[in-house]
Amino acid sequence: MPKDPATELASPAAAGSRVPGPPHERGFFGHPRGLATLFFTEMWERFSYYGMRAILILYLTAAVAEGGLGMDVGRAGAIYGLYTAFVYLTALPGGWIADRLIGQRRAVLVGGIVIALGHFSLAVENMACFYLGLVLIVVGTGLLKPNVSTMVGELYPEGGARRDAGFSIFYMGINTGAFVGPLVVGLLGERFDWHLGFAAAGIGMVLGLVQYVLGGRLLGQAGLQPDRSKGGAAAGRGLALGVAGAVLAVVIAGALHHGGFFRITAEGLANATGILIAAIAVLYFLVLFLSRDLDRGEKGRVAVIGILFLAAAAFWAGFEQAGSSFNLFAERFTDLDVFGWEMPASWFQSVNSLFIIFGTAAFFAWLWVALAARRREPSTPMKFAWGLVFLGLGFLVMVAAAGVAATGVKVSPWWLVLTYFLHTVGELALSPVGLSTVTKLAPHRKVGQMMGVWFMGSALGNLIAGQVAGLFEAMPLPRLFGIMTAVSIGLGLLLAALSRPIRRLMGGVQ
Image (cartoon, rainbow, N blue to C red; front, side, top):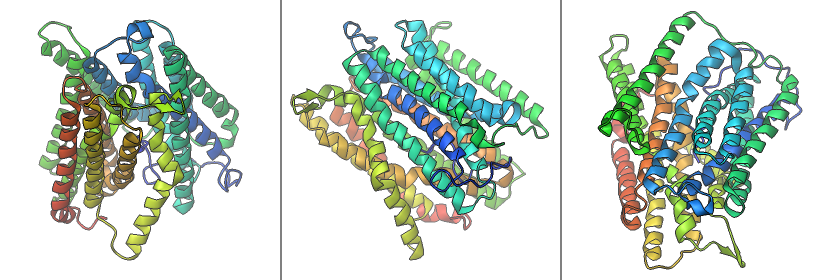
C-alpha cells in the first residue's frame, strides 16, 4: 500500500518545524514521549483506513442477498478509484486549513472525528449513508493525514538524524495499523456482516482519538498555533476558487459525458475527474515552462519532476490493483482453504505491510547506504525504473495465475503472495524517494506548489487503478494483467534508457 503519497503525505525532508516541540524527553524508544501519541494515532487511523479499504470493493460487488450492494465491477471500480483519489486530493486543502486557520493539533482531532463518523455512517444499511460515509472519510483523512506527519517533525526542532529516526518509528506505526486493520475488519466484514466490519473500523479510529486526547499534554506546543503568514487571505481565496472550479468542472464534464443535464454515473464522474486532474497538471507545467521567473536550469529540473510525475502515476495505477482487481481475484479464483477453514480474501491486503514490517524496508535502507558508500547507488530515474519493472514482474506472475484460473482451477494463494512481494520491492525502490526528490528539484519558492502537484499524480494513479479494475469482468484476466505487465515494464525500460539525459536535466541534484 502506498506509503508516499503520496508515501504517507509527509517525509523528514518535508515536515515542518515552525513551532518548538516539547523538551528532549526520552520516553519512547529514546524519543520524545509525544511521538508515542502520534504513533498510536496514526496506527489506529491506518487500521481504520486500510481495514475499510480491504473490504470496500468486495462489499460493492457482493450480491444483495449476501448483504452487499450488488454492483457490477465497472461501477464498483469507478467508486473505488474516486474514493482513493480524493483521499490524496483533500490532503492539500487539509494542510492549508491547518496551516492558516486552526493549527495541526485541532486539524488532527477534527479529522479523526469526521473519519470515525464516516465509518459509522458506512455501518448503517442505507445507500445515502454509504455515500455520506465515503465523503466524510475523504474529508477527515484530508485533515488528519498531512498534519499528523507535520507534527512529528515539530517534535524535533533540532532536526537531523534523530528526527529521521523518529519518522522511521512513526512509519512502523503506519504499517502496523495497515497490517492489523484488514485482518480484523476483513474477518468481521466477510464472515459475519459487512456493516460490522465498517463499524470496527470506526471503533479503531475512536480508540486512536481517545489516546490522542489523553496524550495531548505530551506534545508540548507542537501543532497548536496556525502559521498565518502574509498573503494567507489571498491564498485562501485562491484555494476556495480552485476547489469551487474543480467541483463545477467535474459536475459539468460528468453531465456532458452522458448527454443529459446532471445524468452522472460513477464511471462518467471518474473519467471526468481523471481528465480534470491531468489537465490541471499539464497546464501547471506548461505555465512554469513559459514563465520568466525560472532560469533554464530550474526549468530542466521541473521537467524531471514532470517525467517522474507520469512514472509515479503509472506505478500507483498498477500498485493499487491490490485493493481492487487483486482483491476480487483472491475472492473468486484463489483457494482460500487453510486446514479446512476458509480464510477471508481481504486478509491478502495485510501482506504488503507484513513484508515491510519484517525487514524489506530495512534491507532497502541498508542497500542504498551500502551502494552509496561504493559510489554505485542508482540515480533517481533508475530507482523509478526498477520500481516499474518490479511492478510489471508482479503482473507477469498474475498473468500465469490468471491462466491457471481460466481452466476452472482455484489457484494457490502463493501466486498473490509472490505478486505482493514483487510489488513491495517496486514500492520501496520508487516511493520513498518521490517526496524527497521533489523537494530537492523544485525551485525553492515553488516547493509547496510542486508538492501539491505530486499528490495530484498519486490521486491520478489511484483513479486510473479503479478504472482498470473495472475491466475485471469485461476483459479476460490474462490479457488485462498482460497489458499491465507490458505497460509497466515498458515504461520502466524507457525510463532506464532515458536516465542519463534526465540526470543531466537534474543539474547535479542527486
